[in-house]
Amino acid sequence: MAGEDKTRVKPIAEVFEHLEDRCSQSKDVATAGQVRETGLRQQKEIEEGEVRLTQAIHRQTLG
Image 1 (cartoon, one colour):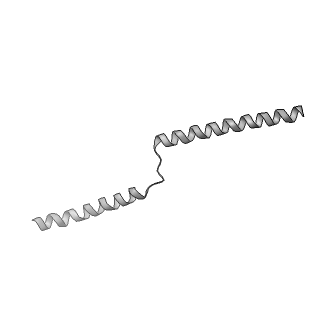
Image 2: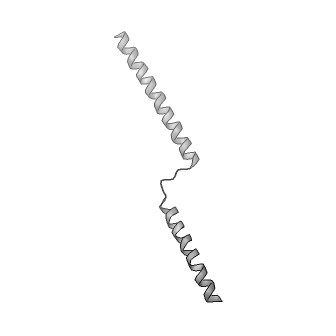
Image 3: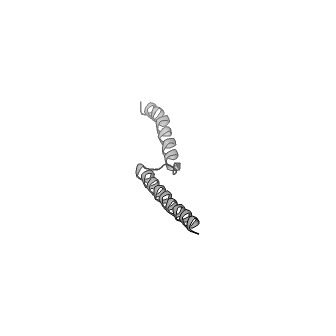
């Protein structure tokens, strides 16, 4: 019976090992917090770009 248990458990263990390997290789997965932080950073960059653009337009119209 012990031999049969090992035979049945081995494929399951192999699947778990495979999943663990895939998870450890998935370094490109972002957390919700990281996505939110990136969005806020991009919004700030857009706003700064809008300010610079507005200033440049203002200088052009006055110059």
